[in-house]
Image (tube, rainbow, N blue to C red; front, side, top):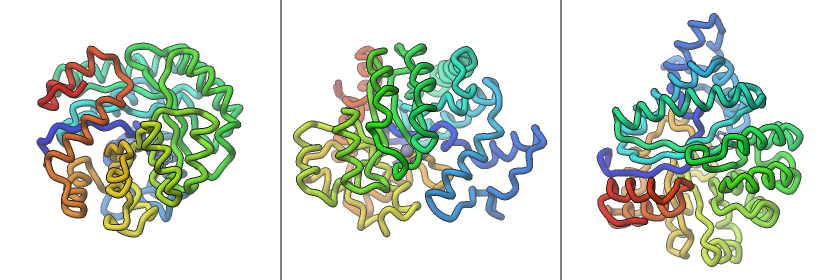
Length: 328
Ligand code: ADE
Ligand code: ZN
């Protein structure tokens, strides 16, 4: 399973930071982060909302473009070791320069340089999606969208929203999403991880994303499932994340297979893998074990992901060759 070529569309850059990497940075900078680690060296949190605050505490030691360059290398080494050939990562100018455009440009340049180097050394291709953070509020999202619009292009390809889905409404963020869309950025929104089917509807109606981050709680409303299928909305499913955080009580209870059977375009990603003790390999193994997914299903899911990727056609062609078929 590890060697199967994979595409990952939903990965939070800081959420992919190995705990040992964050511990090392904290030590270098003299920051006491002991409270966020378990005794055996993983991240410690009680539930999703505590996870978000531990995530932000871990992120606080990433303080310079150089720190993000090192993080990018560590993240891509781990992804490549799990067979990922193409990845889209969520970046937040909130964390990279505090929403200041000049600072954001420096962070982005450092991340891109590290990604280019990893592409040469490891054969993995990375593209970026800027996310605003829902619980930071719509006013904060405006400069973040301006940062995204200012750097939109062949590498920074999308705009989205992460964070606490139970705070605020998607329509509050209309200005930010319009700004990003006008700059040519493609749109994905986290919804239906915690907020139920209604949250997916709200995101679709207000922000018209082509992809939904998670979206799996749409299963509560079969009319909505039909709408997702008919409109070709792609779900960035993160089943290992959902099971670990308790969105569903077990792999068996996860709706990814039912959604797929009903014609929804599902893809597989890991969200924040070291926080959940998972990897693309372990998620694929669990999907095979639980739902009997075989190479054919994984090939279909990866073709869907490549179609839904926000990169340009030339990049898709190159990645299609790595998938071993003509998926464009
Ligand atoms: N940020 C990082 N991981 C997240 C998740 N699973 N949901 C919402 N925001 C996040
Ligand atoms: Zn996410």
